[in-house]
Image (cartoon, rainbow, N blue to C red; front, top):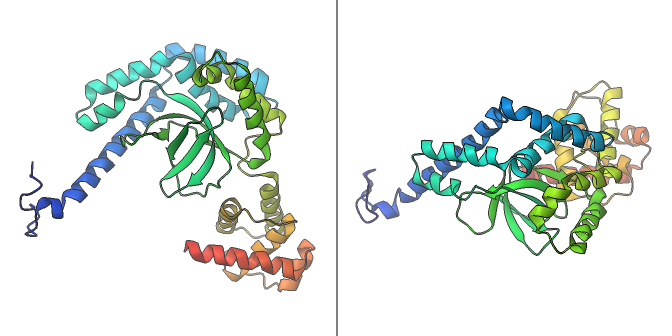
Length: 329
């Protein structure tokens, strides 16, 4: 092992601490993160084992009977899988961890696994968004955590999320990662979180963990009764996308790239438009002028007439999309 004050083995003539030590540390952190991700991935590939499938299906059946009116079967099954592992049969997870500990060579990974014995459900509101972490405040207590982002997709401040969490391995206080399903909820359903938090406050005998274990199905039922069907976008955002898709379909054009940009723009910028069609019309002009679908040779006036909006409204959101797209290039 090279000492920090010894010459760097790369031959630069500098001390190790002034040269390649930072790169080595980064490589170790990357290797550790990859190993932890592999451990999580293998768990979901191998479990539940055949002997536990019947117990899982029994729980899934109960949830489907209550939630099938609101959510698709695949989503219910995914939610119940985490409930089964971490609330109903936690020994499956702890036994798996024990097996992994016997295989691990890297001490830093072993140290993280020793903090992974008790995954917990977390429901909170995103209060800040940074490049690597979301700052999320629990809806039940004053706890605030830093949750590692899973992708570069925009996440707006003010949305709520649900997931099971574990320490993320950085040794930083209150830094976590989502174990599997990280679900964001459109702001249309904000009142549900206040209502569910009040249910927790009315009983003072349970911890948050116990409350969520015993009332998980109630949470999803409240969302379903409020109109939640598993969608990512608010009703307004969905309306914009549907209008743009309707236009593209009629003109026999396809543009996944355009729709992806518009989705990110809606989520990240939260435009304050009165009409969905104004943004959709602006999006079509933006797509046409940036060659995001086969040319249509339509004038701005013709696009505005199709959507039944004014050219000024169309141009406002065309310009906003253009400015947003420029910053993302």
